[in-house]
Image 1: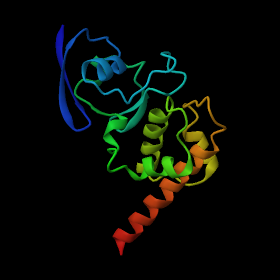
Image 2: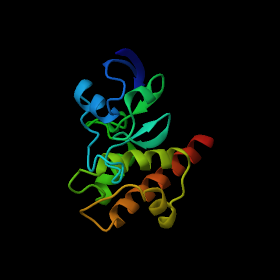
Image 3: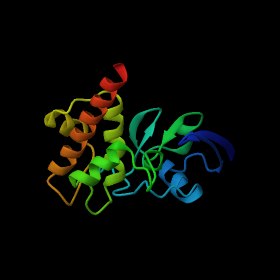
Image 4: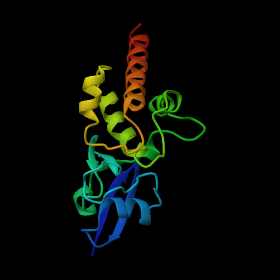
Length: 162
């Protein structure tokens, strides 16, 4: 076994274990980051989405050795119960979170989209979230949540330029 190091939510983490252990298992079982959920275990549902070097990936398909030396962000990086991120706030106020299984993956995919300056166009948001499945809803509240966060981000950037 080889010792692996990766930066998780800004903190350097070390892993001593089988290098082909799935990233989701290391995050949840070794480091206690249980916000990331496992849905299908086959990379089909997106519930386990985390950001790897800023890009959404299905953590159930990534061996931890492929994340060595890289930056991983989980839903725990977004905010805290006392200080939600704007995207989390939008999911709360717009009703984007339902049972909670898909929510962490949706949030992480949406966060990457918002951070890169994504549009509030519903069609663009739906295309971006296409790899994330929700069993509870028709997606409209999720799309509304992301659009709201995009508009808030846009207003924030405009205010900073003034």
